[in-house]
Image 1: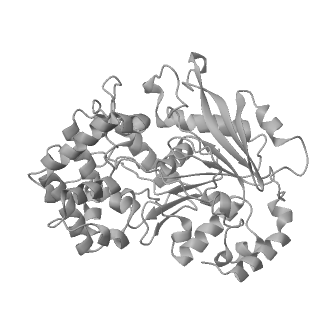
Image 2: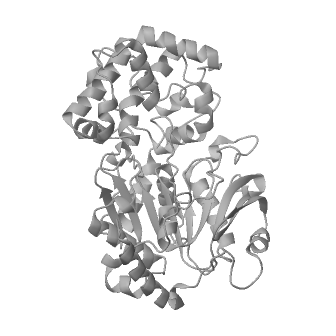
Image 3: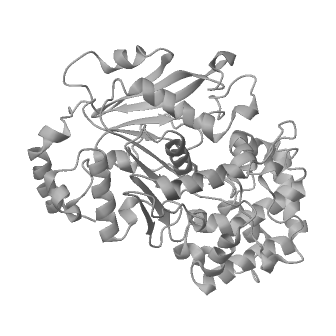
Length: 474
């Protein structure tokens, strides 16, 4: 962590260079010109859902009319939700997406804090309520979603005319990357966090190697033993599951049976542990040999969640599973410690899509993105977690890439960020982002080791929303 003194010294430098970086007002209102709400709402197709106060900003929840099919705009529209965290039009703007639904509370991504900018956050198409009615699922693909971003950016760029940075974590990091691939002239930079890159869907040995080596041998053995025990005790534990489902009114039509749902939750256990927790939590896992049925059942529930593979748990994530089954791919594991106990193995993504939605996998989609990133990436930063399962198949940059980087945060899980990188990489990543956004103080341009976020940490505003759900959900 930086010391307060060092922060103040850098602030002095920043104040001396505001003439080139731009001046932001403390109240989140432009220093001159029409009210920002009026300017934004003057955009054709933009509507106000709600304005919420937040110190130093204006915060709006908005709706924007988008074509269902960007190739045929006359074939229908839908309203896509977004939020705008407005600082000042003289500041850079960060374009954030989670790749899922929209958090309608004020939030600031790490790049937004680093550049002290505005933030536009967009709900991914087909996540409720940003879903056409009726839904033509064939129009849910990575190009259509990138075109949503492009169209919104084109409209807002007339107001926010400084530098733009695309960002997101996990599926949001994938989304930022796909946007750059299809519209490389829009953004001035991309910061993608823990973004999986499943180039060949059937080749998942990287995940097997990850789980064979992550953490300590003792922790891996403890987790595997409890997972195995949950399948050994399938009959009594599934009775508990059935009782819970009956009480909750939970159903299992999409996955096919309560037995398939039970096993899917159990198979999520080890993956979810490393994705959201870590070695420091291993001591809380009960010993499989002596644990009661209740202890095994409750532990699996804590880390995996018995509700995830019910119809009610799956329904909000149908757009993700559809994309995984048609373009993104989904990982699988060999699981030798479960030989003779697992009846279904890792079920493919289409198993979690309702039968009335047709799916067809397009193996070229991820190969195209991967090849493009390797050869054409410019001003792209990928941040991965050393102990994050989804980082086992990361994006890479080759000689054709320019001013692009892939960094791994030591010991980090799916919450990996720039602040968690090794010091030299953290300073370089921060300095690069400031430069790309056009707000690097002179001292940082001369010495990247002096780089740090331009905005103070805000515990409410900078709380990271980690998308938590089934293991097949990055």
